[in-house]
Image 1 (cartoon, rainbow, N blue to C red):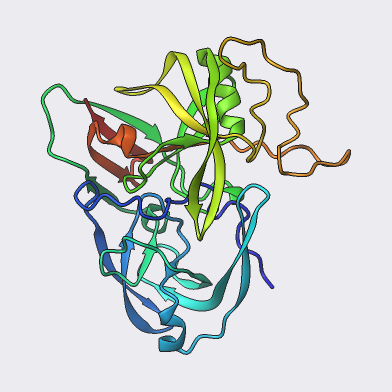
Image 2: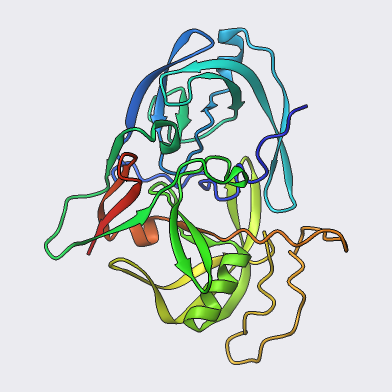
Length: 297
């Protein structure tokens, strides 16, 4: 069995979190196993096709199980090895088959990395006076751990945050490792009780609120609070509790088991969902210029 990339659904869209009007779809024709399919380009998807399971029988594909790691919680899905045409990475590749909401009539979804030679424009809402634009560097496919997600690079605290924009997700959130960097740089404190958030494929993960003394700036966006995945890809134990001193800890990665020969996996991911993107009118992935642009008030 060939496993999927280890962070394939790390920041996937929560079930039922679609916004019908806030993210107009880009539907493109592609071929899968020499048959035409309608594919929606999704800013939050990977460059690996994810398709409706009913295509397996329709196309006569042989499948095998694959694993998706949610920071220590593993989910099994179906995958198939098949030829794909229509993007910049034509050829035989692994296709994931899983139920997903919000494909807008398309049979599959794919991320901007699969079309990194083009300019992909996603209108979010009508433009308003006083908007400003920010551009983050976009370097598709440079880190094999990222499962070909389309990330913008945001330097902070001597590290590089990987920022993914998801107009269909209701909430933004950060991995535990990213929260550590943000809290140290911007004066963050943890507050509130844990609550479970649906990530994808029926998997939920616990989050808590991170409050920032100095907002995290992404161009015109000034993010002063966001949910944090407290145990995934790092630990939030060293972040101070509101009104209390921080507790010492070894940042052992929460659910990720670490031995003396293995360093903790600290993945610095930040997802920006509709709670902040509702202030923005346009999201653009410009492959030729190597940047992701966001226009917001």
